[in-house]
Length: 446
Picture 1 (cartoon, one colour):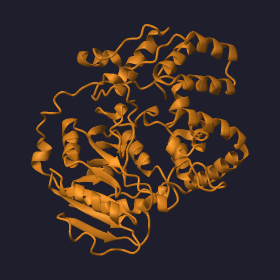
Picture 2 (cartoon, helix red, strand yellow; picture 1 turned 45 degrees about the vertical axis):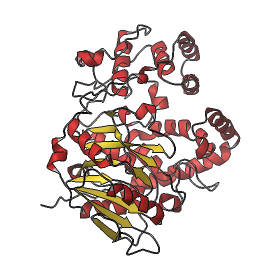
Picture 3 (tube, one colour; picture 1 turned 180 degrees about the vertical axis):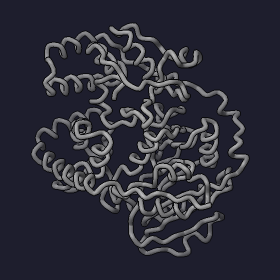
Picture 4 (spheres, helix red, strand yellow; picture 1 turned 120 degrees about the horizontal axis):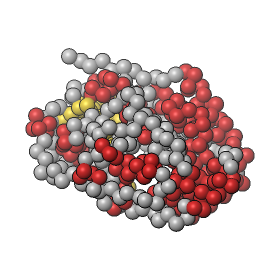
């Protein structure tokens, strides 16, 4: 399911590519939107079909930050090919339009029709629509009833050999404006420092875990927690004093189930595309607050992702499919320090698509397990075509467009090795799929 069909080549495994279990999508029907929202959208008469113009408005609304209960699309009609290319050119870099053309040609679509439609969309101007997102003016003055009720929040922090970084995290929690919380540290460090937490003015439960396992640690902490609300943090982040309060205010303001915070690198700031409220299209366990009842409904984290990647992404998609409202919250941002040692880096999985050894799986098998489980084989293959060539370049250059193009070219030369890496990953993912999910049900205590 795609609001525009060709979007599947660029976002093959995006949350919003799937309908929820109740059959609804995330994309609102424009005619049902409130007038004050419609006024923020820009109709595009350049599309050939009226349906494409409506889909474009729906895309604008959700990406500019519309959050509401308006009726949404449950299916999408086929559009003229020219409109498909216009959409890609309008909202993505020109190189991606060319990529879509190549993918469709390689998929044996009619080359005359494809090239003709591609050329007809040449006059499309790249949109800057995100410069004027939807603003929720009542947020600043919002007096949260939830905050005033002071529910107990259980903060979950797994850690592995990062005591120096964890020290700064706990100092951040000492400065929080919201005080009614406990912290559960699931410590897998060797050697274990029993007295590490004694000097902090915080209510901390410091729990030793002998097995270095991230998802086991989070699941264990959630089961041991006393709060009705769970805050998920990490041992190498930096938070502002109002971090926890702003998460709670977001839950209350939008009547949401999940407040998904925003990360940004040290020395930087919140990315422009995530600097406003919107329906969350991702979930990260290093910066999120949610009601404990969410785990009761959909289960804990899937331990098929143990010592690998995307366990938080899978949980976020599961929550989305089950109809839970998750809000991307820029007011609860945090600095991602990216500690070079400890954590998953120590377990050998810094990046999902960049193996350290030439015959190691690419991507990490859990990634393909996730893709294939929810999106199927074809979408998983499309995700590989889009992500693997770009992963040839080191992580630090992943936002350098020239280096990414170079990586794509180098991948042609390294194709035999890449095929072997992907084949290994595909087979290991198949074993995970055959074994099935490892999602424990949470039993809430009375």
